[in-house]
Length: 100
Image 1 (spheres, rainbow, N blue to C red):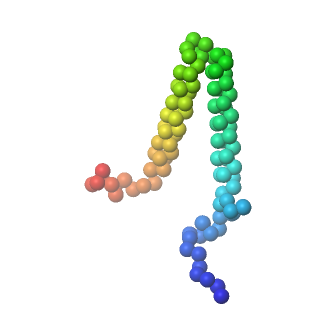
Image 2: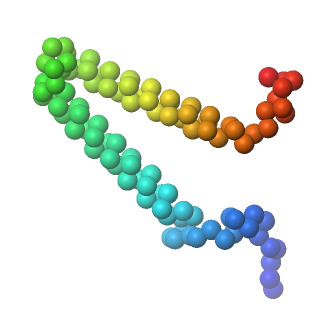
C-alpha cells in the first residue's frame, strides 16, 4: 500500500515547494535580476545608438555596442570565477596535494 520511502536528505524533503518550485524566493530573485539586466542593457544600447554618450558620438555606435557586450560577457565570467572561489574554502585541499 505504501511505497518506498523517498531517498533524499532531510533538507531536500523538508524544503518548501510552491507550484513545483523548490525555492520560490531564489527563483523570483533570479527572474527579477535577469529582467533588470535586460532592461538596463536595452537602455544603454539605446543611448549609445542615439549618440548621447561621449564615446558613441566620437566613434561608431556599433563598436560601442560590441564593447558593451564584450564587457558584459567578461564580467559574467569574472563573477562566475569568484563564485567558484568562494565555494572552494570548505574543500580539504590536502586531498589534492599529490594530483594537482
